[in-house]
Length: 179
Image (cartoon, rainbow, N blue to C red; front, side, top):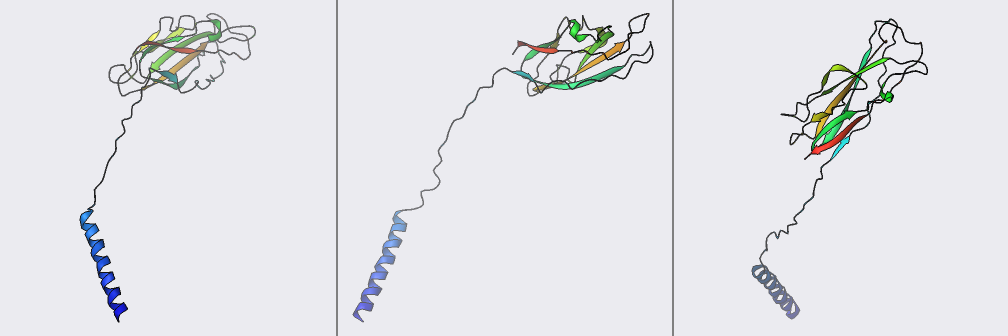
């Protein structure tokens, strides 16, 4: 019986001690620690990729003027300008002949409320197309512009071209102008 009383007293003391510790050590609450994070975004512009190939319908008549287009995204957080290759590489040619090759350009934005500019809306010969670069104005929170390249092929005036396959490569270049 003496052992039972000792156990009961010991258990009661232990319970009191635990309760005293709980009273003496209240929940400290949440303890936040902060971390300041920063990053710099550099001025940038980059094409999402190359334009897809444009395959025009066949020229079967001297008056035929097939047209085609492709669109590509240009990511930019700055003002820039677009220029074009004005060399013979941009002119549709075969091993023996050339076609009259003309281009146009359009943007999905106007440069006022969305990133973009004023495109080239009339057909322009390959050797003068964007010889004066086209301005693209960046609008904050709009970091991309859709650029559509149009091409037209026609027979040279007063003749028909030699039969065969004709190819050209047009290269558009984006160049930084300001932040």
